[in-house]
Amino acid sequence: MKYDLIDKKFFIKNRKNFAEKMKPKSLAVFNSNDIYPISADSTMPFQQSRDIFYLSGVDQEASILVIFPDAPLEKHREILFLTETDEHIAVWEGEKLTKEKAFETSGIKTVYWLKDFEKVFFEVMTQCETVYFNTNEHYRANIQTQTREARFIEWCKKQYPAHQSAKSNPILQRLRSVKDPIELDLMQKACDITEKAFRRTLSFVKPGVWEYNIEAEMMHEFLNNRSRGFAYTPIIASGNNANVLHYIENNQQCKAGDLILLDTGAEYANYSSDMSRTIPVSGKFSKRQKEVYNAVNRVKNDATKLLVPGTLWAEYHQEVGKLMTSELLGLGLIDKTDVKNEDPDWPAYKKYFMHGTSHHIGLDTHDYGILTEPMQENQVFTVEPGIYIPAEGFGIRLEDDLVIQKKGEPFNLMRNIPIEAEEIEDLMNS
Image (cartoon, rainbow, N blue to C red; front, side, top):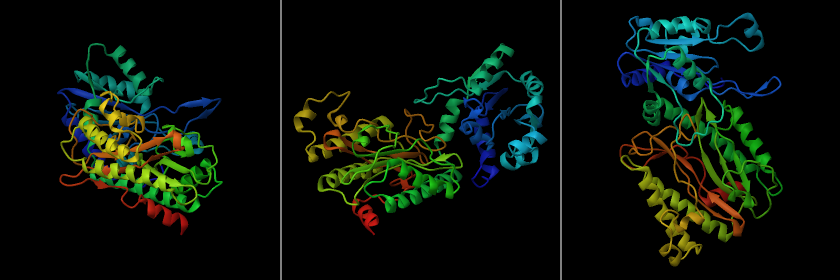
């Protein structure tokens, strides 16, 4: 890992909070992600399952966490199972967590090697009635590969058919959606790294550069600041490419007079940042480009003010739709007849702003959070309105990451990242 060690008190607290939500005489199991193959002996870089990381801080493959609050033996109330380091592993891959390092990372005293898992697990299963399985129930999940977690659930149900089962996910959705101060500091670090990369980009961009050149400049800054890289596949979309919402090819040349939509963000310690900015290739917006840009920025600023405790996500998006409708009328992109005759399920503004305005962000870029429950203090949301005009050859999206406060407007983790059109022009021409 590149990041600084996180205080184990954070993970101890997370396990305590999870355990308090469990049924009596139950245990919960969490598995690391697999290392996924590409071809031959090649694999994708390992990324830890965010749930086991949230509860333990363990950031290596083939790890298992068991939480059993009512275990008769105190040492079995929290257990880690890890790969035992041997000489071969140490030489070829580097030393894995020792039992001492595992405690330093997680605060868990009982650590067994994976070879002992089935024996120890049999013992604790004879002492419990319910097993919490960790299924992925995120509203945007699209799972096509059987995960290590899924294989474990299949095995466990076959081995222990008489046990009751329960779901970890609803507990984690609520716990993970409300951020601890330590998490907010880590997310601020990710946003600060993103700021450095964006400022580097402003001084680099000029007519003739390629989208992948910009991607490389940003990655340079990320790696130099102890980030693993992009928190998600970056969008660097010049000209009409910006009107493809998930454009990720990043292989076109940036032409004079065009705009570049940047939807990028650094990760830090597995935490995400998510920034969108739109900048002029030539260092100056045209009159029309600036007119649309400022309209998007006004929607973003007004939408931000709506992120307060008690707000319902669906109602919030309806209000943002009204803000966007007003701006699109002012820009002449829609008229009052369009609004009068609109389909309630697909309002007139959706022709130019077809995606949602906000999502939870944290350990995942589209983080855990139950959208039917009111917003709470210390949840973090993006705010990312956009206007996309293929007929005019550009699209504009602006996005910040906001922490909901107990009172008043949310706190902007990206407050230091330039966003005003004039400031961007000044920085690009300085």
